Image (tube, rainbow, N blue to C red):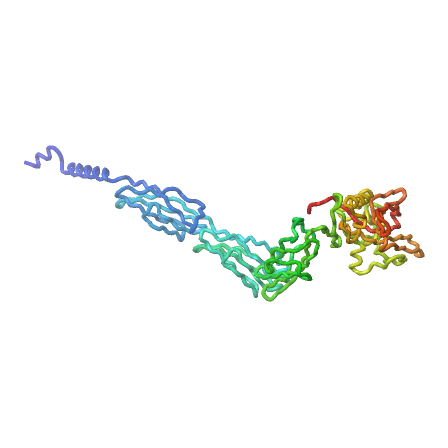
Length: 493
């Protein structure tokens, strides 16, 4: 009776379908959709420790999130379930990370890429092939960054060592005449990168720096100071010693860049001694502070000359001493007539006054005697012969100061230090003739640029111990030899 009534309305199968449909509708309405958001990717990262902070979106209530590594090695998460966890990687790796969101047996994932820049070892030290004059070298590489470590090692070569090998700046010390190969290694985790350099060591030689005979300082200061600039080999020690005088002082005797103090117009010689293990070498340095005189060095023969400023010109305060001799093929045909002598020094010498100039000290004082062509064609670069008027103006200069022309001579207040060097009358190529050297210690003759080519005549200027003033003396451009003082416009170096 009852079944009959149900059949009237619904079959049992239809009732079950209705139940399942209602049940399914109830389940879909209670579950949020899975929609993971893993955040942005991180590409070519360089960060301390090779880490990034991830930025996934928190899953909704009832859902769970977890990070997974799909590709890439040696990566770790601080907290797998934290959407904003810290991820640790290694340089040079590319990681595919997934942020998986699940509910029950259902899950969805979104992936991001995290990549880190690879290690790159770089050596800054440049070595051609040989450590010239040295057995050691300061090594410098680009410093390790982002938690990586750096290490210097010797790959090949005997008897060498590296000081501060775990620092990007280190010192290598080897043996003389040996071949070495060194390596700088950057490492982090399982990753590393290397660079190498190779070289041959030489014999150790010291380098005290360049001579400087014209150091310009404050004119008012009685005590002068300058910085030294010696080379201290890597891993070595150095010591300064002042030679031949107690007037100068190196303020820090074991500092290659120490300050030196002294007084003007005195030439100091310093000794720089370096020691690297059992090897020792020495070098000397000459320095001088400008006072009344500056100092200039002729690069052709390394001779140095004082100079003094008078009437807006720098006048050499030493007689010129360059060895001029005739040559052919020059720009001017008269170069073949160039002649120069030391007083009394020729195969046909006839000495009327004084003595032959011999020895380094006398030759430095008197210099050489030049004919006009030697004086004009062999003038050093930047210098020239004075004009006749410029030389005559020296008379007015001393007069304006209430002085006599004697103050232009050696020991005088002007500092010009002219010398009674005499002259030479050179005859010709006839072997029976004589070269007449005269007036040494009596008269000073100096060349000017006042030249008359039609007469082959030049004007020299004469000062004598016998009278006051400056005289003009015409003479042969070919056959007269006298002293030379060059001039130049005032310089600031």
